[in-house]
Amino acid sequence: MTIFHETQISLSKKVTLHFLNIENYSHDLVKLIEDEIGFIRNGPLNDEDLKDVKKRIKIWIDKKGKEERAKNGFIAEFICHLYLRYIKFEQYSLFKNLEENGPKKGFDGLYLLNNEVWIVESKSTVNNKKSHKSKINEAYKDIKTKLESSEEDKVNDPWENAKNHIQITNPNKSLSENVKKLSSDFINNRKHKIKEFNIIPCSTIYLNDNWEIIDIKDLENKFKIEAKKIEAKKINIICINKKSIDDFVNYINS
Image (cartoon, rainbow, N blue to C red; front, side, top):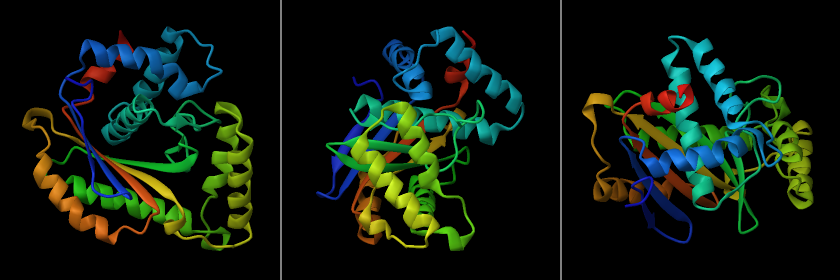
C-alpha cells in the first residue's frame, strides 16, 4: 500500500489526475513528514532542529485559535507540498511568508519537474457537499487570475514573491531569470495567458465522521469532461480526501 493511498491517472499528455486518501497518519507517512517538514518550510538551507520547526508551526496554529478555515487550508497545502516532493517535483518556494511565520502569499507553490515550471494553488473545505470538481475549478480560476493579471488590475505581483523565494530555496539562474522577466511584465502590464503555463490545482475535502475514499471512476469521468475546458499548457490535478486535521495537529504537538 502506498503512503498516500494514491491513484495516478494520465488522461492525456496534457492532463494527469492524482487521487489521495488520508484517513489516518501511518508510520510511513509520519516518517515522510519528519524527513520533509524542515525543507518544505525553510528550504535546503534548513538548519533548524525538527522540534523547533514543529514549535514554529504549533505557535502559528495556536494563534489561529478557532479559525478552523485557516488551519484547514494550512494543513491541506502542506500535504500537497509533501506529496509533490514525494513524487519528485523540485520545490522552489517556501511554506511560509518571508515576513512572518504564517503561510506565504502569492502562488501556493512553485516547482520544477524535468525543467518545466509548475504553479500550485491549494483549496480546501470541510463541507462534504462540496465536490473536488468545484474546488479544483476554484483553484484553477485563482491561478488563472494571478497568471493573467498585471499592475493595472490593482493586485499584488505574485512573481515578485516567487522571485524572492527562489533565491532562498534553491537558486536557479534560468528559473530566476524567467521569473524576473514575468515580474517585469507584470508591473509593465505585458499580459500573459494561462495557456503558457503548467499548473497544479489541488483540492482537499475534510470528511470527519463522513469518511470515505474517493470514487476513482466517478471522479475520473468528471475530469474527462472538465479537462476539455482547461486552457493551461499542462495540468496535474490533485484531489485529497482527508479525514481531519487532528493527526497533523497531534504530530506537531508531539
